[in-house]
Image 1 (cartoon, one colour):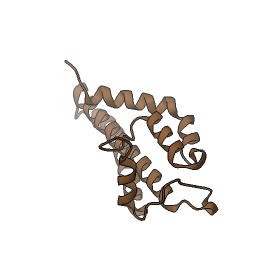
Image 2: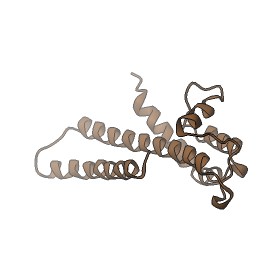
Image 3: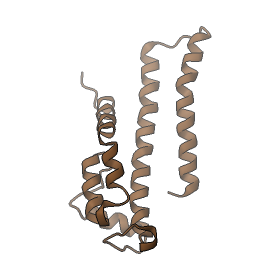
Length: 146
């Protein structure tokens, strides 16, 4: 993901957040939405934000591996030659895909591939509870049981 795509993603997230306030404005203008419609919009916005977080985390992880040098204070134990090779090396952890939704797995992966887990482990530990709550919310939205 390039800086432009990250910037575009941030712009999309701002649009998504604005959508929530627009829903309230629509209701005030007597173009009432049902509670179910409002809930669906809020859930879709949340899912988009959550997906953006997953993409961001994967991108930061892989780019940190690729730029690891002593002068960045990021030291990776693997030295892939490309972004795609880094993805393939990460998949060798008995995973068919890298799971960026499980904060504990990402912390372990960070500790495995970076000296002292830097730059991700300590930062993720600070928001571990919130990330777990977000994943629970995501799962409740996606896995609706009747």
